[in-house]
Amino acid sequence: MKKIALFVATTLLSVTAFAQERSAAPAGAKVSIIAPKAGATVANPVKVTFGIKGMTLAPAGTKSDNSGHHHLLIDTPVPKDLSQPLPVIENKVIHFGKAQTEVTLTLPPGKHTLQLVLGDYLHIPHNPPVVSKKITINVQP
Image (cartoon, rainbow, N blue to C red; front, side, top):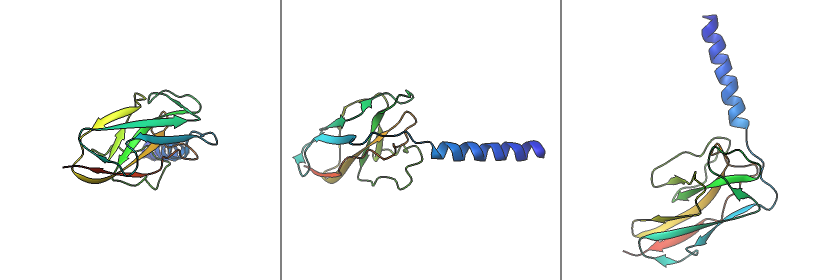
């Protein structure tokens, strides 16, 4: 019983420490959606190009100061709890763990919102978080 209690206590301490670990972001760091432009009407496939300033791109798993990789949020808000790794949600939160700078998507016709969040080597948003402006695009039928 003591071994189980010790395991549970150790696990809880590890989870708490992990939840609090956030990489620092330098002042002025920014990510942006370069294309398409906010308010654009586009046709499928939709090419989305990402921008970054004040930090460098690094693949997931590569721990390096002032670096991270993009996560694209489609029609979904930035998570409230930024102390946890960004989740993978099909067609909602897309990870670019190889430090990609663009993606080609097929989206249903209609209005969609797009937003970037930079995640560190563990997919955890930086402190302070580096988040783009949310843009809205219209996909033609």
